[in-house]
Length: 297
Image 1 (tube, rainbow, N blue to C red):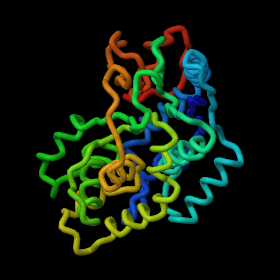
Image 2: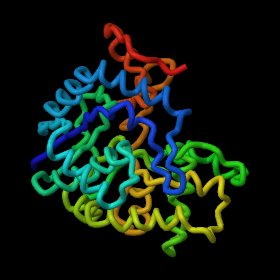
Image 3: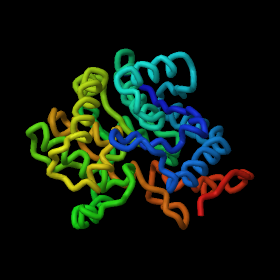
Image 4: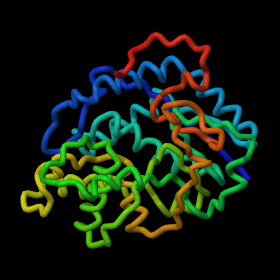
């Protein structure tokens, strides 16, 4: 059984940090600028600790490990996506890349586990051995989107990366294409699956048509959705992946909080086996690292 764990480290240039990628409104998001700057600096400061922790976990799982970086393969992929729609921002393209690489690696490996760079394994249990990899596993975050279902959508002003926005974006896309619009809000920071289900998902084959469908959704002048919400519809990977889960009806399940636990703002939860440091508070894990970068207040 050939297995691989992989991640991606591509340093997004300052000028590309805050592209929204909205089809109708191509402005940058200045409210997001401080957070994006801190993320950039913290990943740079902690990248070696993150990489070697993931590599050590791959060794424990008897799996290969690969970190994809800024190289010709990335530049070729970036260019190919821009050819599909030139307004797609680098942040989104970076997140499409992980789905693309899941498929690429499934041509050579039996089982593939993707980790965002801020994923920190802290267990000696083998994730490949405790999940049925005839399924595709990622992490549902439905509770984080619940508030948005009860909000006045005519006054909706949350950014495109908020889970509630992704719920409504997927809802609208499914409805547009004739499917039941209810959907899971999925955090693709971790994804693990066997090669057969990865090939069934077929991200590279589905991607161009999803971009086209989302563009139509964003530019629909007769939409049933309030303008305030429609302006937030974007091209994020998690909307696309949730759409595929619902529309293709492949075998999908959610990882538990144990296997994909959000790092709390007040320290480490000892029940978590794999930590997702979405808040980038890596200092809880490695307090000896001297961080001198920007901090979001």
